[in-house]
Amino acid sequence: QVQLVESGGGLVQAGESLRLSCAASGRTFSMAVVGWFRQAPGKEREFVARITWSGGTSYYGDFVKGRFTISRDNAKNTAYLQMNSLKPEDTAVYYCAAKRFALGQYDYWGQGTQVTVSS
Image (tube, rainbow, N blue to C red; front, side):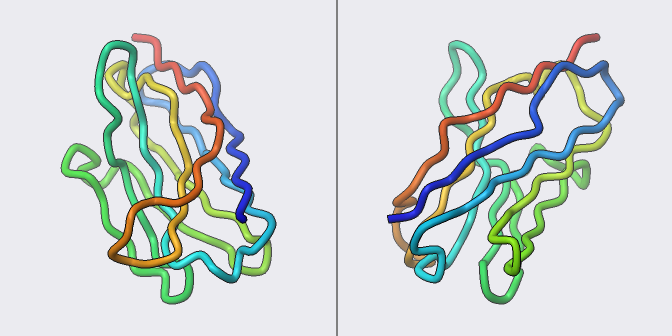
């Protein structure tokens, strides 16, 4: 099992930045990919970004357009999502997830952290 705990959410104004953290514990060696998703009220969950745990290859959702950067620190078993130029439409609960196989489903999910961007 892998446990994921997100932190770093909060209330910011449009144009500001936030960095979310995802701390992993347990069988972290089994993680192949860590991803970030978000869900706004009344909307479906949306893919934000993912990164391979070993090689650091990253991939982003279309809406990111260079504003967000995903990274990971293997020594700290922590993944990050740096979010710049935040917009009110970025308001959502952000979730960290991990999977054991690159092509499989996400196996583990965190509890989420709220990000609210005011205009």
